Length: 155
Image (cartoon, rainbow, N blue to C red; front, side, top):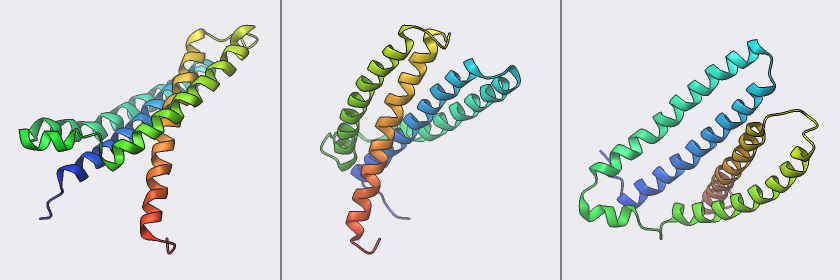
């Protein structure tokens, strides 16, 4: 049995967190699509929201349980902000903030006249999707490209 270090486990849990945020973002996008979909499709979309929610919980639950089971001396390492994934998350949060700011400006312009006759919740859900997808996507791309760099030019 191989033993994973606490720092590696924390990085892996942060990666699961980023994937989970992508799932939550997709839930927001699907809920926005439900508002403009025909009834039959809206029912299917609602089931997909339930499936994605179960997937998100399934991704996060093992990490949450593992956090509570950590010995006190390992919690300092686990919650350290100096880790590789923690640094990538901070970078991804900055990109997400900028993407959200720009998208809110665009959505405000589009929603101003309400030419599409959509509920305000539609625009909020689209904004949440952009924020979460930008954060998760940025983290995953940075993580993937750093992994490729670590492998060298062969990858």
